[in-house]
Amino acid sequence: MKLLAVLFALLFANAAWNPARADCPLDLGRGTGLVIFSDHYMIAFRPDPLRIEVGEPFALVFNVCTKSGSAGELVVVDAVMPEHKHTMNYRPSIVSKGDGRFRAEGLVFHMAGHWEISIDVRAGEEIERLTHDYYIK
Amino acid sequence: MRRRPLTAALLASVLVAAIVAPAAAQAPPDWSEAEIRLVGRHGPWPPPPARDPSNRISGTPAGIALGEHLFNDVRLSGDELMSCATCHQAGRDWSDGRALGKARADLDRRTPSLWNVGYSHWFGWNGAGDSLWSQSIRPILDPREMGGSRERASRLLREDKQLACGYERAFGAKPDGDDERLLVDAAKALAAFQATLVSPRTRFDDFRDALVAGDREAASRYGLAEQRGLQLFIGAGNCNACHLGPRFTNGEFGDIGIAFFVRPGEVDSGRLGGLAALAASPFNLLGRYNDDASGSSALRTQHVRRLHSNFGEFRVPGLRQVGRSVAYMHNGGLATLEDVVRHYSEVSPDRLHSDGVPLVRSLGLSAGQSTDLVAFLRSLDADPPPHPAPPPLCP
Ligand SMILES: [Cu+2]
Image 1 (cartoon, chains in turn purple, blue):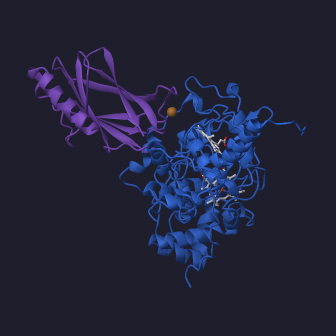
Image 2 (tube, rainbow over the protein chains, first blue to last red):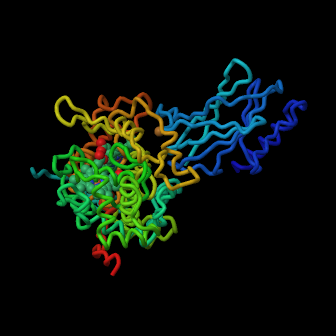
Image 3 (tube, rainbow over the protein chains, first blue to last red):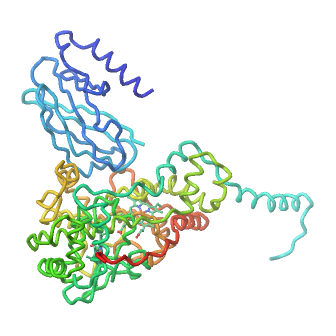
């Protein structure tokens, strides 16, 4: 179900996206990913390993595209539990893989429940924050 | 009790109540799909053997054998009177039967049991160790504990024939590294041994497996009080927010409102001090003694973050064999499981400065609920088989 929704989001995202940026590669190597938008950005990402386990380190792999076609940079990735008002006990590090691809390493969700992932990106001076809600059982 | 004339109807209703009430109390609780999933996450037990990529002799029979001999060897201590086994005794669930550790000096923290220690990722109540082997160096060098040294440990490995032979079998080379490296190798052997200490299966595990398999018959062998206590644990009590997984801990840190004053004017800063000690240690996983070339074992150490809330946080203890302990919490401040449950039932919200939905809040449990919760916690205990003495290293 969930996977289907994600795949659907992927297809839809491709269709709705500015054709000039059709080369924004949303496939993250394993065929599945999450996509989030703003006025300026489209970001595809997926966890590595694909299944996040409570208390186990994981990474997020990203593809950051901008509407203008200029290079987007992933600045900070973080996560909080909004209900409990706490962050992760770890601060992820980010490595650029070139071509708008990034890898954020060192995330750990140490509790089950609702986590809000924040993704700070920029293409120029201004940093914009995109968020994504993740529920882990 | 004063006798009063009762009408027939009243009498009947009293009788019905008398018959129905105990029957209702005895009915096994219903388990929803969601609850069964939550219970399932506390198993299966035992897990696969622990392997530590930062320790090249982890899981090897020769490493484990050497480690067990060192664990019992008083010559690692400065006065040759104390071994690891002095405080971590096989017959006392690998602890010492005391509320607070005691060596040359009184210690400020309780000696934790070593059951299932191989599955942790932070060690010590404050998480100052990031590997089982680095945690095993601390008591050797600490003047308040064994008061040993690099020189003493390396001399022991080089000069004792049995240990030297055990070393060669474990590491595939003679013990001729420098003193510090040999101390680290001794600790890696100690770690290999400790990682084999896995607590036995319990009545809870039988219930968990039966529930997950849908075997009502087998599940019904678990007591009703235990079942109700378990429902509280994963439900209204919210205990599994921190005490999760097969070991009943997320391996991280929390503040549940236990005093952190050691003595007037002196505090145990818990996790905050642990992070400082971790960063300062030459034996942490970012240092030269990590055997893991892939670097993945150092991920947590590399990314761990210092937070204001770390002050007064202590590691979430696992709960297997918990009822067999003589004291609870990092400071041994609570004597019984009943005291622990009373703490969670009555803890003051003022002590738990939480901005959001509090993870720990006074639960206001009834007497019956408290009994149930204790009964559940006790079902996590089982008698381990006797631990045999290790065979000679090189007969
Ligand atoms: Cu939380």
